[in-house]
Length: 308
Ligand SMILES: Cc1cc2nc3c(=O)[nH]c(=O)nc-3n(C[C@H](O)[C@H](O)[C@H](O)COP(=O)(O)O)c2cc1C
Image 1 (spheres, rainbow, N blue to C red):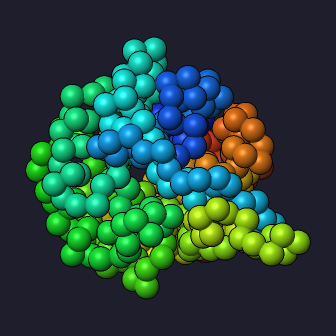
Image 2 (image 1 turned 135 degrees about the vertical axis):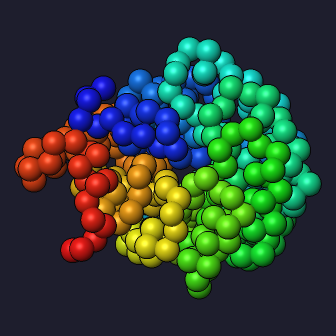
């Protein structure tokens, strides 16, 4: 990897600031490895739950101009099987892994954290913000600063790994939620999860496109929301932000760094540009550095944020 892209996240050296986010190819060690080979600097597992889940019935993805809607319904092999994949990946590679976990209460999050403690994962990400399991679990935990505080605090007390709280864009005041996570001891924040949910309609068939009717929005259409929330949050907290939401080209990644992210997730763009998207974006970032008089990505991170 190019040394101009090297950076650090929570003290861990990265070959690239680009991250494979939760839910995109992180279900198996081979999927993780393909993302690594193609230039991702951190790999995130699919969000793992205590028991395996089959997720929602298809269609679970609806494409529209500007992005996609998904209602995967947190299909995953369960924490034990998921960690076998993480461990297998880590046997073959030093690339850091974020283990993403999902639960609906403190007790279950604690059980998940305990399992992750015994894995080769490098970071623990708490998915507090999945919008497409509303029918089953109701409003995401990330909608309440008190819930976020309670869960992050409890997990921090028992996690061996640095804890990342993944927040939702679907709130009125992201800053108060981010501050609650920080106060509870979160080492970093991840934002944003998908927006909405929204709906797509097949007019000819007179029915919703998604079997589950509603799904979380991702891709280019959510980038302005992600930039705004990352910018606002970065101005208020002292912990690093793993930013994501609509990053498709190198210039999007640079904008997100300027908004206040230290690492950048690339999810939906994998559907648009193939898994080579990581290498393509890495190269596009280097082109931006060349064209704008920066030596390294670190130079952008050191900029006084958005004096612009
Ligand atoms: C198909 C799909 C599945 C996803 N699954 C998860 C998941 O399991 N856990 C999670 O925290 N986020 C999940 N996400 C959200 C992404 O990690 C990311 O936060 C969001 O898609 C915004 O980034 P993007 O526009 O680059 O895709 C999923 C997104 C997509 C498109």
